[in-house]
Length: 92
Image (tube, rainbow, N blue to C red; front, side):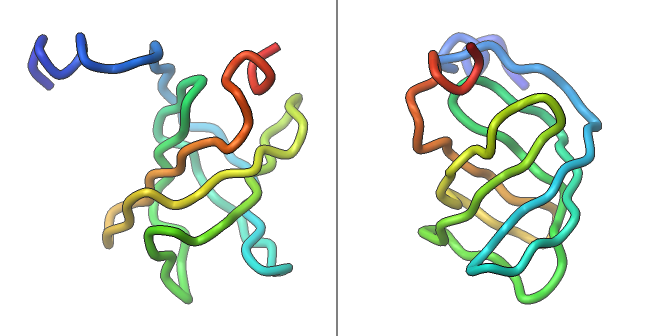
């Protein structure tokens, strides 16, 4: 990652891995966090059916309340989520 890209990030990032649960339309599946920030999270690929940009999900991580999020990108290698709640609330 270039220095220019790091400077454009709105929030600091922390690296995983951390395991959690992702709920999509009432179905819960395990997930693995690659990195996260107050604005969102990158997950390792989360299985089938695949997620698509715009999908609404809820992320469960140990020690935090359930985090509502939307898929902003998805590929065979992972998924990017943006949290719906204000970052100050997410990481109180």
